[in-house]
Length: 426
Ligand code: SPQ
Image (cartoon, rainbow, N blue to C red; front, side):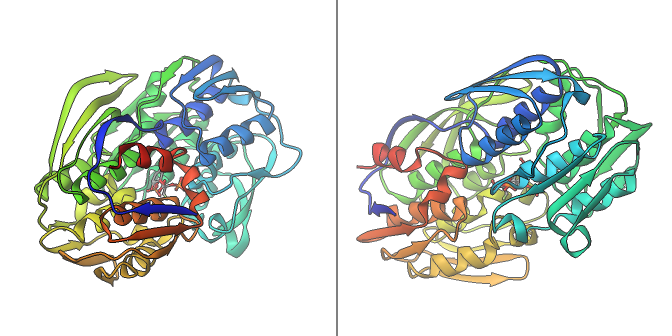
């Protein structure tokens, strides 16, 4: 159980753990590359450790010492058929990106995860990979885990994705790297582009035109060193903490500010929050900066359209901030929230209401009326890391004490969250 007390002030200079999306990809691409890949700043959260365990099970030597990881890549076809099922834990990124990789492999593999993974839709990757020629099955005709894959002999496709999803895009592009001809993916809005950037860093040619990305089959990856920046999705909780508690300020160093991920910065600024990017630089094809955040009085805004994929994982904590903004905040076009670790529309609403917040669910988002006085409550993370952390941040502004049950879920993406919160709270 995590206990959070109302804070008088949030202050300090901090760093957040490595970016989850980039950490997963660094291990996967390192395993498929020729030669050694060295990773610094790796996220040691449970999700990324699941990715490491899966590749070890396929015969890849991976040494991990805290946030330093060395992957001995054996080339694309150096993976071995696993002798038992691959456990993806709670990680959607692991199962969906690995589906694309396994679709190219001339062996049989089965992937399974926890209760939450068992409810998340997989046909979004299974259908296009089947179109390319992979043999994949799962419960409900391939919609749910366990997924069983026998890959090889793929044909490139031109895929129009119905959803803006980096996991769908990445799975197809990875399969496309070993398919005949060219593979292209077009999405309705641009999703995070870490796969495209990192593939280029590993020596692959990737073509991008608006929301379409193309790769040619038959390309190889070359091992390299990767520095993983801090995760902006983790920094988002600290940004919100500053905005929730008057008189607060923080310097968050070394945060990834890839434009496909910085919707949270745009949203906070639109709400009237003071947030400056300092010391901007580029590290391994990824923009990085320090974030100087100062408490400000916020006003409600509308979030929709192209902005949504750029802040999809931050919506739970944006909803928390909106309870302390003057006026109405409306979140639209965010139906993807329903298929995350939990249905994040339902879980945000049910947990935030326990504090006395005025929040109403809609078909594709929610409406929050501010400002409301929050009262400390007993909250359930429902096994969703982002819900656990978002509610802990609400607890900083709520009177009395807040208890977060099932707080172990937080380790999925932010090990050390509770200690960091204590360090910056006065
Ligand atoms: O990996 P997982 O479980 O899907 O994690 C989440 C998260 O909140 O950490 C989503 F629940 O992040 C996804 C993100 O929502 C990570 C991700 C990626 O690394 O490619 C892409 C997004 O998902 P999607 O479905 O839009 O592709």
